[in-house]
Image (cartoon, rainbow, N blue to C red; front, side, top):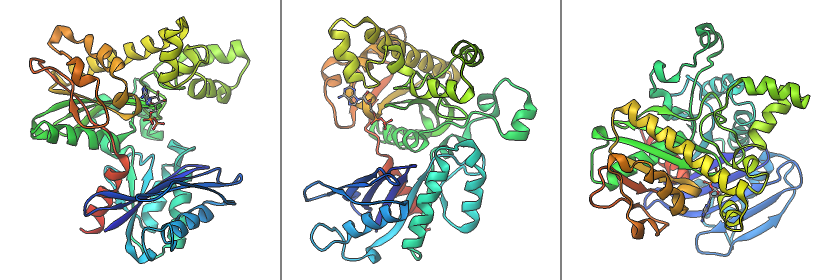
Length: 398
Ligand code: ADP
């Protein structure tokens, strides 16, 4: 079956058409600047990448352009939309309502809407994408795959914040966690790659990209994760602060004469390694280059990031009372061997050893720890689109 995977943001939309028989990508691309002017980047598997500037006042028009490209006589990869068996939509927040992916129905969409408060920037955009797609493909089954679902197995001891319990009862304020599709995909693949049953494994997945989070996976279930009510908690990220003393917010508001929105903007967009480096960059490649040129702030930002990752890994080893494998994934986790090595060197005391040669490769599933290492360390490229396609296939063929 061909499955169209859609990840819809407020002004952009990423898509992939995946053939689930051999899990190949038939075409992929991206619509940008929706509602502004509009640009479609379209890449068929066996053809040239193409950038088309075309008006996209709404998401419906953007999706129409994607569907036109997919079925185009020359550059298309299918003859008609009948060849799309299902659509899988990424949905950011499923609150406590969704512990798994769900077939999209009117009732299901109402429930997603009830979670909008928890992700006001993301969920409404996801819903716009789903509704636009439904209008254009009314008879095609669709599935919503939630970033939060995988973490719904966390116990209350892990997901509750130390604030009045009534805040949880009234507003569902708690840790939810994100990147669930990636943490689930990578933990499953780690067990499979190491030839073990995931039920017998304690795995720590480090999803280190521009947004970054860590997840403790015990027996295949998420037992703790670093992001919280929103993706702001946890690691120091590209531009997000991660954990801070909440009193910093009031302090900065007073000192900088800003309202809550202004301070939250600092924490979300001007912090992380970008802010720490004195605005050099949120990209680790730029930070490394600047550090090599003697920029101390850039070097320190990288170290602060690494230190925070180390603290989370350490706390999850404690939470699970051990660890069998540590998996690195996402842009930085998959590509930056020096960051991986520096993180793992902190765990020399517990017998973790990195193989320098294995750690210098990239682009594939690989073990980067030595034969003697007490814990296996692996790099597993994440593939959230494929994970969404698999989930969608499972639900529509049930
Ligand atoms: P997101 O999906 O959260 O936007 P990605 O998973 O694509 O992020 O990761 C992007 C980040 O990965 C970049 O900002 C950069 O820091 C890092 N990265 C990507 N490629 C490399 C590389 N070759 N070396 C070091 N860091 C890299």
